[in-house]
Length: 401
Ligand SMILES: Cc1cc2nc3c(=O)[nH]c(=O)nc-3n(C[C@H](O)[C@H](O)[C@H](O)COP(=O)(O)OP(=O)(O)OC[C@H]3O[C@@H](n4cnc5c(N)ncnc54)[C@H](O)[C@@H]3O)c2cc1C
Image (cartoon, rainbow, N blue to C red):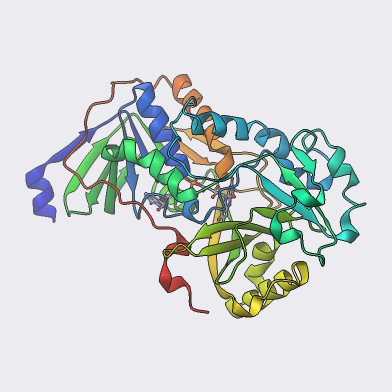
C-alpha cells in the first residue's frame, strides 16, 4: 500500500474538503460547486449512512415545537424551511430536488379526548395558525374514520420527503466529487492523506475543511487535537412495523409533553409492503428499554391509540440511532443548526434535516468572510467515488420479530 501511494504520487489540490456525505455535506457540496468552489467530499462509509437514512423525512416548519403553546427559539428558526424545500422540489431553489419523492404534502396531528383543552394555547399560536386546519370527520384519513376514534384530527401543511431520494438527488450530480476512503492517515486543517477503497493513497490539500460527519465530527476534531466545539448525542430506539397495515399515514399523536407521543411515517420495504416507522416520545424513552420491551411498548401504544387495528398480524423491528448535535449545557435539542469556523476548520451540525438549507447558507457566508477563493469546478477523477447507503426498512436482516 505504501509503495503504491509513493509510486502513484496521487495529489489533489482543491479549494474545499468536506468530511461526511449526509444531508448536510451533500447539500453543501451542491451549493459550493454551483458557486465555483472546487470541492471534494470525503466519505468513510456510504453517502447518507449516518442519521440521514434513518430520518423520518419530515420538513418541520416549527409547528411540532410550538406544542407547548408558546413560540420557542426552535420554532422561530425553522419557520421558513418548508418554503425553501418546496422551492427546491419545484426546481426553482438553490439545489435541484425535482427527483425527490414527496411521501406526503402534509401531515396529520391527532389528539386524544383528554388533551384537547390543554392544547388551546398551541392552536392559537402564530406559528400554528394558517398551517394547521381542524378537519371534519369526512376529511379524516380512513384510519381515523373508525367509530372507536374519539379524538380530533388536524391537517398540518408541512411535507414529508423520502430520505433515500433526497440523498440520491443531491449525490448523483456531484458523485464525481466524492471519494470513499478506508483510512485517514494524516489530517491537518489544510492537508490530509487518505486511502480510497481501491487501495490508492491520495494526498489532498485545500484552503478550508468542513466537517459535516454527524457523530463522526467528534473523532475528526480529536484527530486535530481540538477541544471545541463539543458534541452531544441524543439516542433513539425507533420502531418499524409491517404486515397487514391498512394504509400509509404521516401523523403525530399529540402527547402530554412538547414532543409528540408517537410520530408515524410510512415507507416501503424491498417488496413494496407498507412499513410504519414510529418515532416521537416512544423512541426517546425507548432507549431505556431492551429491544423486546420496546416492541411490547409499541404494541401497547398502537393498541391504545388505534384499538380497531389488528396488531397480532404485524411484524416488528427496532433501530438504535444517535442524533449528533452541538453540545448544550442541559443536553436538550439545540434551538437551531450550528456551525463554527476556527483556523481553517468549519464544524457543522444541522440539528434537523429540515434546517439543512439554513446551515448551508451560514457556511456559505463564513466562506465569503474568510475570503476562500474559487478556482472553478474542474473534473475530478482517478479515485473511487462514494457509494450510496440503503434505507433501514429495505434491509431484510433488520426484520427479526
Ligand atoms: C431516527 C431519526 C429521525 C429523524 N427524523 C427527522 C425528521 O423527520 N426531520 C428532520 O428535519 N430531521 C430528522 N432527523 C434529524 C436528521 O436526520 C439529522 O439532523 C440529519 O440527517 C443530520 O445530517 P448530517 O449530514 O449532519 O449527518 P449524518 O446524516 O449523520 O451524516 C454524516 C455522514 O458522515 C459520514 N462520516 C462519519 N464519520 C466520518 C469520517 N470520519 N469521515 C468521513 N465521513 C464520515 C457518515 O458515514 C455519514 O455519511 C432525524 C434523526 C434521526 C436519528
